[in-house]
Image (cartoon, rainbow over all chains, first blue to last red; front, side, top):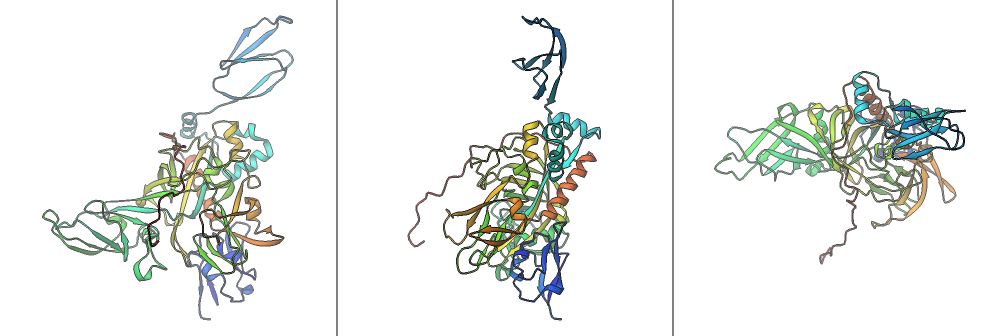
Length: 59
Length: 442
C-alpha cells in the first residue's frame, strides 16, 4: 500500500497530476490530501513526489 | 500641503485652491474640468466641487507607522480581494505593506560554512559533509556546499540540500576534511561530527532564487521525461508549473521598484537580504499591459543566517531521474508607495499568464505550445489540442501562504522593518545566449 507522510509533505501538489484515481488532491486550503480508499496502488505518484512523502509499504 | 489663494479667473474671478502636488500620486477627481497643473502644483476651482488626491508614501513614512503600530499590512492574496471590492485607489490609500511569498524548488542555492579551527589546525583542501563534497578552495576552514551536489553513491536520494536542511534542523553531520598539510596548517585529516551550533559561521547564499514567472512544462514525446520540473508524462500527460502566482514576490513588483540590492526579506524563517540580481536575470523580457513579464525574467541572489532559519520553511527535494534540489521559502514585503504599484499588487491570477514549453525538445529554444493564466493552471486542468491535460504545481501555495502570513505578523509586531534598496538590481544585466565555440568531442 501507499503511505502518505504528512510531516515530509510540503504540499507542493506535484503528485496530484499523476494520480489517475483522484486519491491525491489539493484540498480547499491548498494542502495535499490523500484518500487511501481511492488508491489503486498503481505507484504513479511515487516518482512524482520530490519530498519522499509517498512510500510503498507492506500491509 | 494645501494653501488657499485667490486666483483671478478671467471670466468668473472665483477663489481657487492651490495644492502642493509634489507628494501626491494621482488626482482622483475634479469637480470641474478646468485646472492648471505645472511644476508639481495643482490649481483647481472650488466652487461647485472639490478635489480628492491620493498621496504618495515613502518607506520611511511606512516604517514610522510600523513602529507606532499603525501600519496596515495585508498579504498579496488579501489585497487582491480588497482591491476587487473597493478599487485600487482606496486600497492604495489604506494599505501600507503587502507581503508576498514563494516556496519552490530552487536549485541554485547553497551555503557558505566556516567550521572553526581545530588544534592542530588544518587547511582543508577536500571537504565532505555526510559524504557530500563541498567546495573548499576558499580558505583554511571555509567551504561552499551546493544544494544540488550529490552524495557519491547515494547521490540519487541525498545531497547538499539534505545536509543544509539537516544542519538547520539541528542534526549532526559528519565532517570529513583532508589536506596535504603545510607548515602553518600541519594537520592532514579531520573527521568529526558537527552541528550548526558548533560552526563559527553559516549562511545560505543562493545565486538564483525567486524566478519572476517561470514557464510551465509539458512533454510531447512518447517517453516519460525526468526533469527539474518534475516527472513529465508522455504525449502531454501533465503540465507542471512552479510559481505561487498572485502571491509571488517578483510578479507583484514587476518593475522591481522596491526590490533591489540589500532589500530585507524573509529567507527560510530568518531575516535575510537580497544580494543583488540573481544569475540569469532577464529584466528585458516582454511584458503584458500591466507590466508583468510573460516569460521567465528577473531573479534574485539572496543570503541569510542559517542559525536563525526554521526547518518548516526549507526542505530538500529529490527530483526523480534528475537530481537534488532545495525548496526555499522566501517572503518579500512590498511597500504600497502609490496607486501604480497598488494596481500591480492587486493583479490576480486571472491576469498573470505564463507559457507552457515543450521539454521534449533538446534545445534551449524550446517551443511554447500554449499560454495560460495561473487561475487556469491552478484549476487542475487546462485544454490543449482539444483535450484536457492535468496540471500541478511544484511550488507549495500552502507554504507560501504561511510565509506571507508570518511576515505580516512580524511587521505588525514591529519585528521586521522595511528597507530601501541600496541600489537597483542592474536592469541592464541581461543574459546573452551562449555563443562560445564547442570543443571537439563534445
